[in-house]
Structure formats: C-alpha cells, structure tokens
Amino acid sequence: MGDQVYMLKDGEEMAVEPVGVLIGEGWMPGTWVKFSSTAPTLNLNVVATVERSDGTGILSGFLMTGPQHNVPVERLSDMWNIDRLQREGGDFHADWGPLDAGGPMRFDSEGLLQRLGSRIATLIITPTGFHKFYVFETEDLAERTNPGTGAPLTYPVGAPLYVSNRGLLTSEQESVAHLWTGYVVAKLDEDVEGDYIVVAASVI
Image (tube, rainbow, N blue to C red; front, side, top):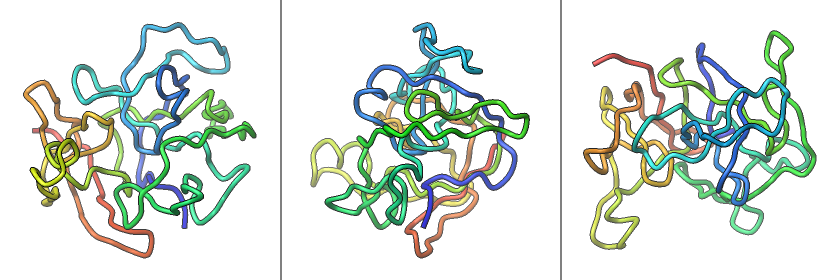
C-alpha cells in the first residue's frame, strides 16, 4: 500500500507553505489549493503560501502528499485513520487530520526542499502531468449535504474534472463558479488499494 496520489508522468512541482485550515485540520493527498495572500514564514525554497480551495476562483493545483507521509507512522498507507483504517475515494475513508510531528524532508532532483512535515508541501501546478488519484469525491454535493437526496458520481473517460467544495476532485460542476481543472478522466479502475482515476492534462 502507499500514497493516495501518484505522479505517473511529469507534473510541475513547487514547494509551498500550507496556511489556514490546512494547518489546523491537516489535509488529504490530492487536496486542491489556491494561492494565499499570507506571507510565507519559512524561507526554505518557499515562494508562496496556499489555502484549501472550494473549487471556485483560481485553482493553483493540488498537494501531492499529506502532512503525515511515512514518518513517523506507516500503516498500509501514510494517512490512515487509526480507528477506522479507511480512506476517502477508494474502498476506504481516510482521516483529514493527521499532522506530522516528525518533520520528514523530501528534496527534488535539483536538491531543493519540497516537503517538511506539515510546514512545507509539494504543490503540483495545474494542469501538468499524468496522475493516479485514489482520493476523489464518490457522491455528489446534494448527497454529501443531505443524504438521500443525491446520487453516486460517475467518472466516464474523457469527462472534465472539477474541484468540490471540500477541495477534492469531482466529476460534478457544483456551480457555475466552479472552474474546470484542466484535467480529464483517462481511466477509471480499481486495484488492491481501492478505486482510482487516472487524470491527464487536456485542452478543450
């Protein structure tokens, strides 16, 4: 088992400092963000801060990993909820909240710091690359808001992808203000880790 988002090819990366609810609540790998006007407090290759996106306005991209990534805990995946062992978007539901106290580091091919615990995260700038997501919305906004009034989401090949009000990939355009991410569904399938979608950058 492993992460909830895999980069299959390319993808422009940028080191960013999470702020706002990302700091207090943690975040899932694959959470979409927007640039924040808050000034960075760290000078370790960070040029911008980001906050969780609600799917409207400018979409900067998504965070490649969660704040708890392998160190100090690795139980099948690095974002498991210890009580439920479930994950959002696959066969399981993951915990939004784990924060990494160990501060593991990740460097890019140029030796630049890309991740430091929950303080520096790797942003994949949209729409670049070819990615495999286990983290995505499985029910529409109506169903999440008022169970019994909505429906499960489908992900047909070629469908444009949006960002939900919770900052996760969705096939539903929840309002006219919700903008296309620049990605489309290339494949929907499942494996031992759960249901997944492969997304590709595209141009309409």
